[in-house]
Amino acid sequence: MTTISRTSTNQASGQVPLAAGALLRTEPDRNCPLCPRLVAFREATRGREPQWFNSPVPSFGDPDAQLLIVGLAPGLQGANRTGRPFTGDYAGDLLYATLLEYGFARGIYQARPDDGLTLVNCRIGNAVHCVPPQNKPLPAEINTCRRFVSATIETMANLRAIVALGRISHDTMLKVLGLRAAAAPFGHGAVHAAGELRLYDSYHCSRYNTNTRVLTPDMFRSVFARVRADLDQ
Image (cartoon, rainbow, N blue to C red):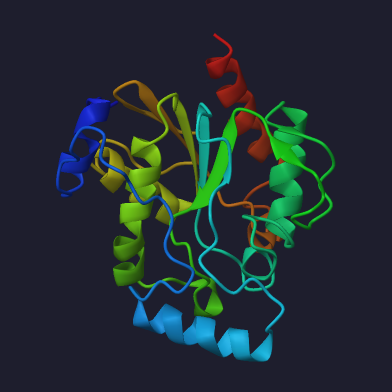
């Protein structure tokens, strides 16, 4: 496994080193203009569904957490509608049930942002903050939004574990952490070291993956069981 220093993540991902005490922007503006295709899709959706959130979806959970979960992008009728990651679609049903089982969440998940569910030592975000057409962000959009993922990690002082849900999230984290793809290939259940951080891979908990049995609930739980055991050491 490849190991790098946590403090080198910005340099390794091609970003300008951060000055000590610099204020980092971890979330895009509500009307973020950086990706024209996503802006157009957002505006069109706002016109059709004005009661929805329809903005870049912020991370959910404690910035002081040891665990960060990184998904792909908000679902159109899930997080883009509700404003909370993985809330309102099938992927959230499996994710939050698993987090509750392993002590990374508290309360009852009811698929809405006011259900009172809280995360415990855990934070959830996405590689891309805005909903993309057909749930498929373009490479340029993934690259553009990576600055916010990098900033999120830089501001999580207690971070020890990152779970990447799916290959795109995995590839994003490789760039953020400065890991070489050849040295840290994606694989469900794989664990890669990056300095004091560990990157855990999982297939995405989408309905498609679970319906086709690419991912079973037991396979998904096994990833978080490993994370739980490692953090409890």
